[in-house]
Image (cartoon, rainbow, N blue to C red; front, side):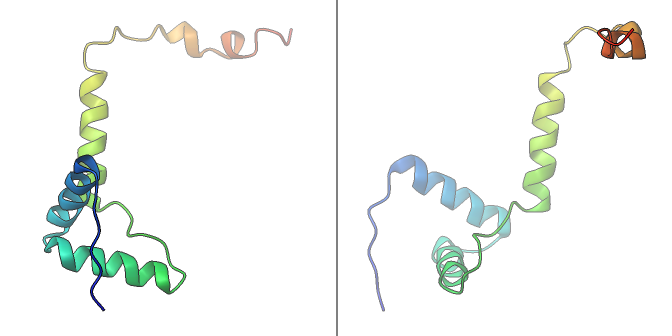
Length: 83
């Protein structure tokens, strides 16, 4: 069966990026996603590399944050309402 889809550009770009991250053509990736969904499965999860890239971006976002005062993690500061 052949199906034609009209995707929004951002959706297409996202799907193409997911296929590239897995090293497969977009049509192969989409066929796998649809087959998984048809069998009651879920869409493929994030690859290990995508997960690492996300962690790297999060770490980069916090690079210039000031250090946390150790007192902020004391038992007294966490449970200040329990005398």
